[in-house]
Figure 1 (cartoon, rainbow, N blue to C red):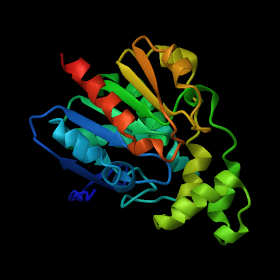
Figure 2: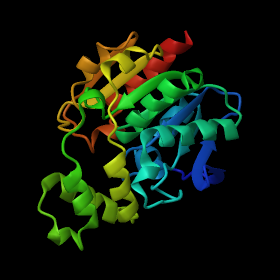
Figure 3: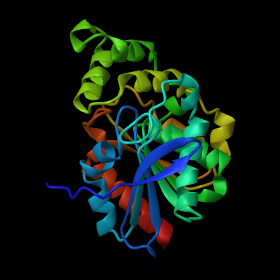
Length: 260
């Protein structure tokens, strides 16, 4: 399906320039989309059809290119990528657009960033949709040092680690700044405690592919939340779950319930 590419705008925060898009009716309920590691607003949300799906549902759709990704600034200092700083970028975008509160959807790293957004700026987040991240939010999602090494290797041919090859190939395909991504992955793996998860009072939907070997158990994470629910996306792994129709329909039903 052909996807219309939104026009990107720019704003400045924390001495960095950020790219974002903002489409749909100004008076519609806003959804802020936060993409995953090594991805971008285009790759994570436009190409899989999320923007079109949400616009058809009558939403205002906003998406940011996280620092280190897409058309946003790409610092090479690992200290720039703590998820609190990245969550503050999204809060600053809401400030820039004069949006007091939004539904927030994040995929994988974007889900982790959105959890810090909800913890540190709870008044800005009406609800959360977490895709591609379950109990890994709390216990971690495995050893990512080989991914950083894969990103910094001279070429894909030099990478033998299976997950490292997957992310290196993805980074090469998207023309990413691999040094920035390696810095990001070395600093962004900050865990959220079970007690912190329990502080999130917003309604939360968690959607994870049934074949996802990265995210962790979504149902275990949902059980920690005061208002959490989880779904399995049949037959999908971490990379393929993002655009799945089951995930999209669950999110639409979730938003419909919120609006009742």
